[in-house]
Amino acid sequence: MNLLAIDTATEQCSVAIATNGSIVSREVPTARSHADMILPMIDALLAEQKLTLSQIDGIAFGRGPGSFTGVRIAIGVVQGLAFARQIDVAGISNLAAVAQQIALTQKLRAQAHVLVCMDARMQEVYWALYEVQSNGLVRLIGDEQVGNPQSVVIGDIDIAIGVGTGWRAYPVLRERFPELQIDDTLLPRAAEIVLLGQAQFEAGLATSAKEAQPVYLRDQVVALPKA
Image 1 (spheres, rainbow, N blue to C red):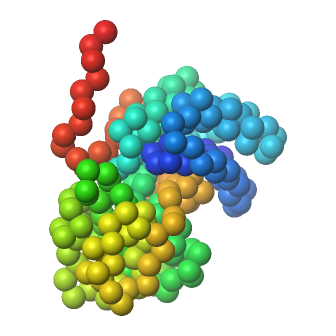
Image 2: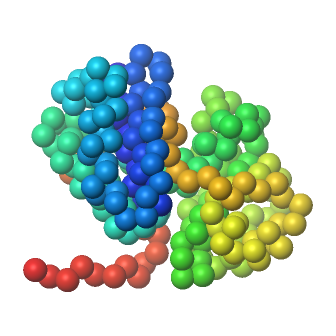
């Protein structure tokens, strides 16, 4: 199966392709140019792999939480590509993608827990707890949430590492978890989104393009002006 993945939800634009058991990816830091960059990045990676869009069997995408505009860009691109080719899609949590990245880079053992806290602006964080499974993939424990740093409560669960930009943006988080190892540099990437997307496709959890939905977590989203 040839699977394409994209992510535009944060200050990074990334694409990945999984084929023949391997994953290739590209990431470019950008604040506002996701809409201009994502399609050329897809074309370039396809050309590098000697593939065409007609050879793509499915698309995974970062469905949020993240930038409202960035998540909408991903939805629009995915629906445009998938509708035309009548292929299914898989929306992947951007928080899960960050947890998966640290699980792989740190080679975390099965049952290790990762606390993801991403900067949500407005003095809030998107946060969630993940557990590494025996197959190396992460699974969500509880719910994804958004709130102020004081709302991050994990009870007596032993955490292997804290990861995400929220730890850098809000020092109070470090004060609340003073002994926890932290990596505050990681952003979600298409490389992990395509890996988690493969699992969704294999489990029969992919959906049609028209069912692709963003996840914002925050209820108050600025409405777009009517034309």
